[in-house]
Length: 237
Ligand code: 6GU
Image 1 (tube, protein in one colour):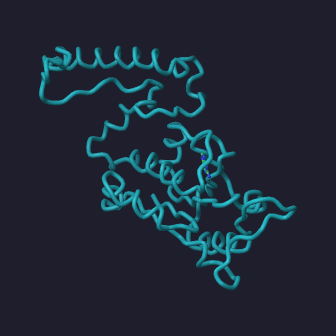
Image 2 (cartoon, rainbow, N blue to C red):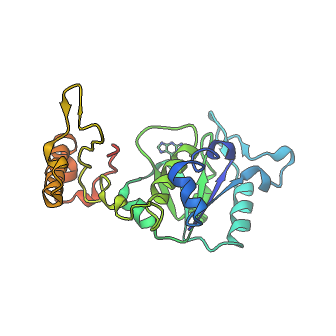
Image 3 (tube, protein in one colour):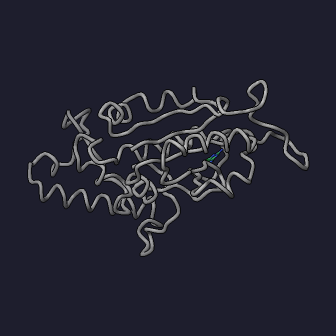
């Protein structure tokens, strides 16, 4: 899978995909992430990419010319399945959307900055608009990092234990159960006995019960009949 990310601050995105699981996905050739600097595509002097909003008001707007020049140049090389614009007024990102996007071949992600991008780019090029939650970030880059991480880790073959993404929180509308590792006792605090007994059926049962208990306590909204359509779960595991 290839993900191209169009941004005015590519430096912000160098870090997130160069470590841990994302690094492994890229090293294995399962995920290609390209950072594309919008400033390389402006026809304007001094690498200008933003301008004042028509009608006045605070903040700057990313201009249509560099954006369209970049998008069309990239489109000539890659048939994108989706052109995604990261924006707080987009649809809230969740596991279901991550699962769906992880099956695509080529994605282009556009990161807005300042006040956003010229609306005509959204009308004529963008196919999907994503927010990562109800708060405002100073740009789409950190949100794009979140989305690419969530997608990248579930690409088949990325996780060494193939089943481990399936047991994540949210994959079955349940939060994940508690986990423990050695030592079995620390300061008198003991690991649940069932995990030490080696009975895999009993372990599975215990984990399922704990997942239900945890979800009922913390996120009862996920347990509702329609939970697949629930607004984005915001808590990790
Ligand atoms: Cl995608 N962008 C910005 N700028 N702020 C956000 C967001 C995106 N999602 C939540 N807040």
